[in-house]
Structures are given as structure tokens and as C-alpha cells.
Image (tube, rainbow, N blue to C red; front, side):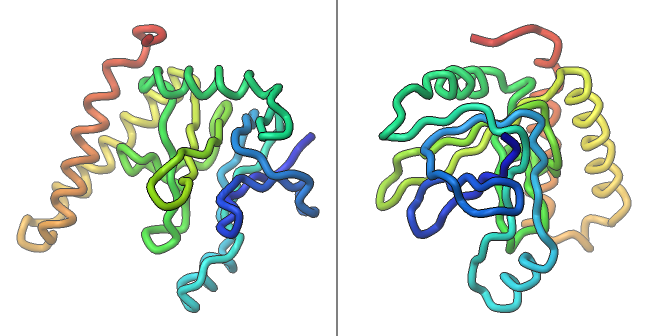
Amino acid sequence: MRGEVYWNLHRNIWSVRRAGGKVCMHVTHCTIYEPDFVVQKAGHKRVLLERKKNVHAFVRGAYYASYTAEDPGGSMCGSYLRYARRNPATCVQVTYNPYRGAFFTEKLTGMKVTEAQWAVMSVVPALGQPKPEVWACFDGEKRKEALTQHLKDLNLLYNIQPMTEIGLADQSTIWKQIVATVLVLPMIGEGTIY
């Protein structure tokens, strides 16, 4: 089944709906094959204008497996999640903040994410209320190319503007992204990390 998965702010759980249709289930974990990370422009604009969140960002793809309290047969999701957390060379944590940009980004490098080979979504217990966790996994060579290009873009951005024109916060962000990218690049191609 192709579907869309988004974080339900009212229930603190993932909502799954058929593409463009109604919600068919709520899950704590799910796996999506060939996901597209979608942010609808009109919804994003409305969030910025009203300062009130709405459903405009989701992951769309071939819905594969899920886990809920009612359906404990979702052990496959747990396997995918463990794999994603243990393989930083090809799997990255993804985040979305409508106030920082109109796209999903890698949590570590800040690189834009639009698609992947597969994605895992889960709910992480946290103080106060549960938090969403999203991991995207990529083909090793494509990931290496994307990171190399990202590094070139960051370096170009940093070298174009004189230091005085870039604020301290921006300088810090750029350097964090460069360091994170440089640290991940050598890991690609070394095989699975356990």
C-alpha cells in the first residue's frame, strides 16, 4: 500500500493515511520503502503566517511494516530501526522544522533530504511527551556523492562571503556541518558498523 505518514501532534503518534485520503491507522513504528520527504508549500506558508502548525509535511512511499500496541507483530520495524541507528555511513536521522526551512534535513549535517531507499519512523519516550524519530537510509555511493557535493557547497558558501558578513551563529552552523560531513565521508564503503 502506498501511503503518507506524518507526526500527529494531538496524539503524539504517527498517523498513516492512504495517498491523499483518510487516516487508516496510528502506529508507533513504521517502515517505508522508496520514501519521498514532502513539504507542501501552501501549508508551510500558512504555518509561517499563522505561527500555528498544520499537517503539511509527511513521508510518502510504499508502506511496508508497522508496530502498534494492538499489533505487536511489527518486529521487522525494530530490526530496521536498529540497523539505521548502527550505520551512520548510510543511515541518517532526519528532522523537519517549518521555521528553519521548507524541507526535511539531516539532523547532523543540515543537508536537505528529499528521498531515500527506505525510512523508519518511531516514537522515542521523552520527558513530558513522546518525540518523533525519523531515519533515512541511502545507497552508499549515492550518499557519498551527495555528501561530497554538500561539502563543496558549504565550502563555497563560507569562502564567498567575508568573515565580517557572516554572523557568529551562521559561522558556527557552517563549521559544524563541514565537520560532520567530513567525519561521515570516510565511513562510507567500510561495510556495516555494529
